[in-house]
Length: 204
Image (cartoon, rainbow, N blue to C red; front, side, top):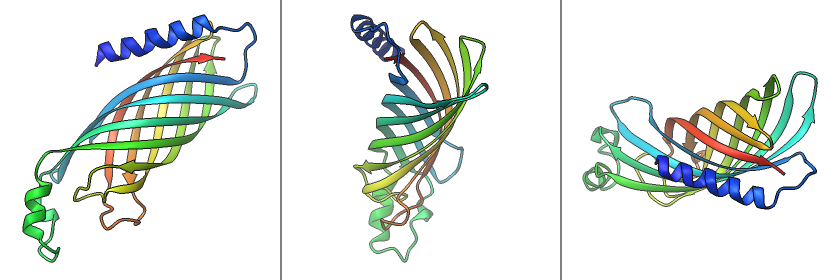
């Protein structure tokens, strides 16, 4: 896990140093890696790790705050297992077969496009705190008792802390994430996870 993060940091740093320009812009490009798990409960387990590409654009700057929009393509790798088989009720067609299927450990992949809005509070010339809210469509490749296969949405609320060096910015971001399909599928209980994310970005 740490080796993968180091690889992304080194690759991003080298690429941008080779293409560095003297003139700065309101755009930043970055990569991040994160992981997390469900809130403790007796119904199911869900743990995940994910990779994101990130495009930031600063839309406004005031004396105390900066406002940015953020687009984040993401691939999320999850592991899910139903613990409480009574979650699948007897009135469900083929309920015994579904209980047997859903209580097996499953690999779940999600392909996401997150679109977010970020409010940043600079602390001196190097550090900053921010609040981020994002939502985006996703495609999940696995059906579970909580989510139908196919189209859904990911909602994320995050707090972040950044440290800058020249045009580089290093980022740590704890977050809460909810995934559901807004009733578009037959199963829509969704997943709720707590995550931590580490990123690096470069001002173009």
